[in-house]
Structures are given as structure tokens and as C-alpha cells.
Length: 151
Image (cartoon, rainbow, N blue to C red; front, side):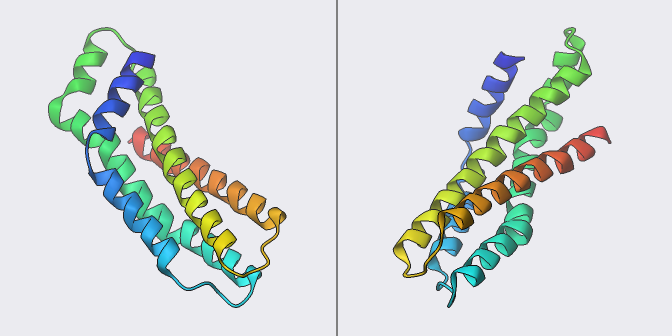
């Protein structure tokens, strides 16, 4: 299963789709003007990661993990070679987890850099809350992908 995950991640990372989405999201986070207060800035990040971020990150991750598998039939041949279906689905969820984790980590770092460069008094507690919220978005994204994998 580790070889399958590694091969899938190498195949997915070789494509520019996910890079393009991450770059656009980072540009949006960095280019928007900071809010008047630190609480408003954190609310903006929470709303952005919750709605736009989840939608525009989750769809490319799902498509990059599952589209090639369905088009080429590799998943069917791997199952035909004796690997149980639940292990194949678990490897796809592992791929999605690493991709979502990396994407939200990059978005958090961009938000953290913007917080440090802006003149807002953002506390370490607020930054830790933003990191926890990013982890929540990753877990929720994995849950959505897991539900769609059951179909």
C-alpha cells in the first residue's frame, strides 16, 4: 500500500493543476487588504478557508486522486491482482489527506506571513486557532472524500 500511495503522489505532483490552484489561493490570501482589527482578519481567514478554500481545494484534490484511476482502469487491475478494495480506497484517502494537508499548510503559512507583515496585533493564540481550523478543514475534506468514495 505504501508503494501505491507513493506512486499516486508522484503522479499527482507531476501535474500542474494542483500547483495552479494553490498559487491562486495564496495570491488571494496575500493580495487582499488586511482588515481593520485582528479579529476581523481572523474571521476573514476562517470564512475564506471554510467556503472558498474548501471548495476550490477539495474539487481538484478529488479529481487528481480519482480521475486517472477511473480513466485508465488501474484501480480495477490493482483489485484484480489481489489487493482488497478497502486497502485501495484507504490508499486514495491517504493520498487525499497528504494533498489537503500540504495545501492547507501552504495557505496557513501564507496567512501567517501576511499576519506578521501587517500592522495588526494578532496574538499567537489566534494563529494557533487558525492552524487548528486548517486541520479541521483537512479532516472535513477527508470526510467528504470518504463519503464520495463509498458511492
